[in-house]
Image 1 (tube, rainbow, N blue to C red):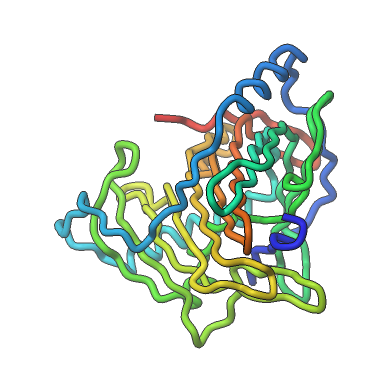
Image 2 (cartoon, one colour):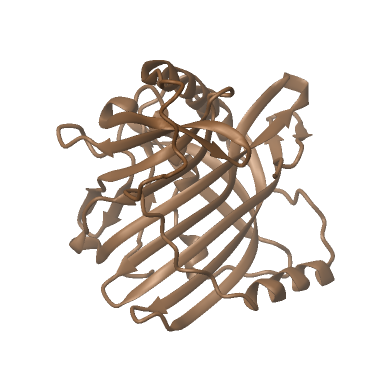
Length: 305
C-alpha cells in the first residue's frame, strides 16, 4: 500500500453552488467496549476472498425484452447522480474497514480491521471538485496504513453524473435482477478521446488518470444505481499497479424530514494487484446520519435484502 496505492481522487466538474462545510466529526452511535472487541475479533477470524469482478463475463440471466431505452435510463440515473452530489457531503456514517495483504501466490501476509467514524466531503482541487474522506477511529480503536488512504471510491456511482457520462461509451446490455429488483445492466468504458477524470493516482512528481470499464445495475423502476463493478483497463507502472477492480453496492436510506430517499454506499470491495503482492479492502457502511450546520437528523439504516 505504501508504494503503490498512494492517493486516488474522484474528480467531478459539478455546480459551484455546492458549498463545502467544515464538518466536525462526532460519535454517532455508542457501542460498549465489549461489542467493539467482539466485532473486531469476529472479523479477524475470517479471511477475505480474492474475488475481483470479471466485468467481461457474460450474464446468462440477461433478458432482451422489454427493450432498453438507454437515453431514458441514463437520464434517470443521471438525475439521481445530481441528487447524490447535492447530498453526499452531508452524511456521516459508521464504517468498518477490513484489510488483507497477500503474496502473489495467495499466501496472507498482513491483515487488520478497524471501526471508524466517517465523513465524506467534496473539496476544490485545481479548478474542479474532488471527493475526500475523513476517518477517526472509534474510542479504543486504531488506525492502520490502509485505512488512511484517500480513495473516494464511494463516489464511483457519479460516473453517471450528466457531466461525466460523456467520458464513457455506454450501452445497455439488457434486463437483469439485483437483490429482487429488476435492473438494466449498463456497460461503460472510458473513451480514449476524453480526459480520465474519474480516478487519478497521485504519484511523486504528478498524477496519472486511470481508464476504467465496467457495468452497473440500474433499477428499472427507481432509476437508481444498485450495484457497480469496475476495473482498470491497463496497468499503471509508475504507480506500481498491475490491476485494480472495485464493486460498490448501494442501498436506500430514508430522510423522513425531507421526504427524500437516497441510495448510499452500503459495501465497497477493492482489489489491487501490485508487482509482488495483492491487497483487498472491504468497506462496510451503516448508521448513516444526515449532517446539517444547525441540526443533525438520524436516518434509517440501509435496507438489506
